[in-house]
Each structure stands twice: as structure tokens, then as C-alpha cells.
Image (tube, rainbow, N blue to C red):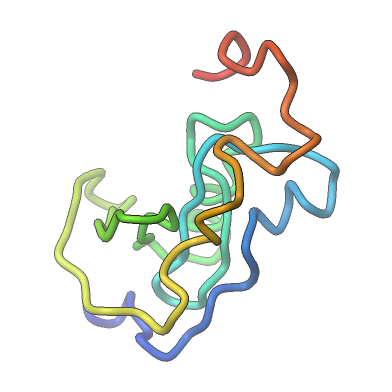
Length: 113
């Protein structure tokens, strides 16, 4: 699995790249451990983190939520051990969850899986 983690790759931003480009919203964020791409979790409407993993064959993500340091491997569909990644390791703590601010519908709970 060490080939799936680049400890020098920095996050692509503070939110989901694709949701940001499309005006979407997310529930939680995941960071690709290989290239730093930040995407939304599978509970989010876009499911961009797992789509990125499938498209790029970068199978390991780390939670990009404050206070969380776990890794997930899409190949085996389970938590795995990882190595410390380049900072920052989460989105800003004042960023709302779900987010981003101003784009989350009031009925967001009814819209997630």
C-alpha cells in the first residue's frame, strides 16, 4: 500500500474540488493520499472522492475532517494504516459541516445516503 501514499502531496483545497466547480455541496471531505485531491464522501450527493479513486486508480483516502486521522482503501473497502500526510490534514475548523456555507439545502439530511 505504500505506493498509494505520497506524504509530500498537499491538499488540492479546503473543499471538494468538483462540488466547488459545479456549485454543489458535501457532507464530509476525503483527501486522496496519493495526490492530495480533496473530494466529498459517499454520503454526499456527488461522491467525488470515490469517483476520483476509480478514475485515477488512487485507492487510499484520508479523512479531511478536523480531529480525524483514519485512512480508507477503496480496493479492499476497509480502514487501513497510513503515514502522516503533508499539512494541512483537515479543512479549516471554522468551515461548516456539511458545507460549504450558503450552498447546503435545508433538507440536506433527506438527500443523503
